[in-house]
Length: 242
Image 1 (tube, rainbow, N blue to C red):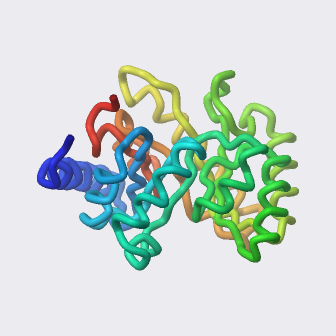
Image 2 (spheres, rainbow, N blue to C red):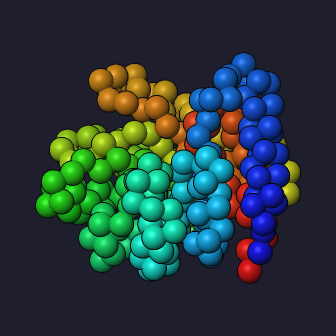
């Protein structure tokens, strides 16, 4: 298990790499939010990273989070726990949406109009506005979730309908790039998501389209160069998963 010193070393290295990538693109490092991907990571290690100043944490599965988040609240204390943002970044099945709305501050993997409508109803029942990111399948891989970039009519139609839902706060877009040996190979994926975000901002300028969640441990520097405002990092922070 990593010591706090190990976690701090990893975190400092990641922040330096993000800052260098931002400077190469003429951006400010403060524009990029680090989302610590805590899938399979023990609550004690997540709490240690939270104490080092990381604010956003992303979980992939509702079931795993349902056990871990109460433990984290106990480890951190209610005030410190509430100061963090606990986000679902993995695929959300509709039958687990009610549990997710009760657990998470944000949903970063909204991948269909049907799910959006269900989340809107559940958020209304909770008396809250739910921040979400729309997941887009940029690469076209059958194994990926998200609205299909290759089908513009379906994509724009779904987004337009989502914007009518009063209890969802759509804050931007998310994508999962293909796994490749050379990060440069996925630069076009990140570029296309940024271009889509810019087009949506022109079509619906009154809406906030700030966030682009793209880039993971193997390719986050390229994602930052292409405009990412959120990078989702697991191995780069916690080391290899068990």
